[in-house]
Image (cartoon, rainbow, N blue to C red; front, side):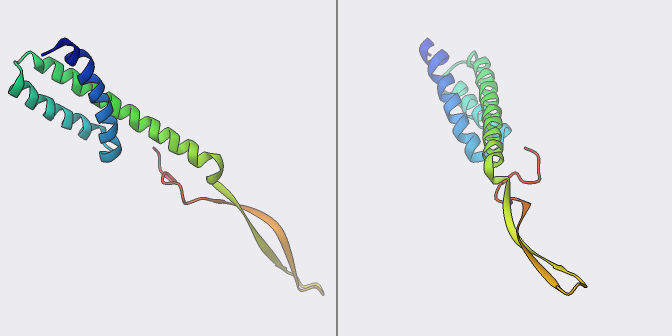
Length: 126
């Protein structure tokens, strides 16, 4: 195979496609297994057995890229939920019942902090 193809085109294609597959499959091990299967078929169909070492290296590259992509996406999701959506302020009226001549008092403007359930990672670790 051409040296430029082996050392430039295939690693760049592996990185780009592993990012895409990570976003679709959401599992770095499945991404690495997919690349290993594809490169294994290419190694035996179009090349000799020396391409097996490159198959293992490209699989490791695909796995590391998928893990890094997963980490970055989780970090961005946490930052997005942490800015203003994590907790929202809700104003509710409070009624206080007393035994005084004024039986109920409505207080408006009380602010409670309510956790937002719109974030996907609410209540679980990423």
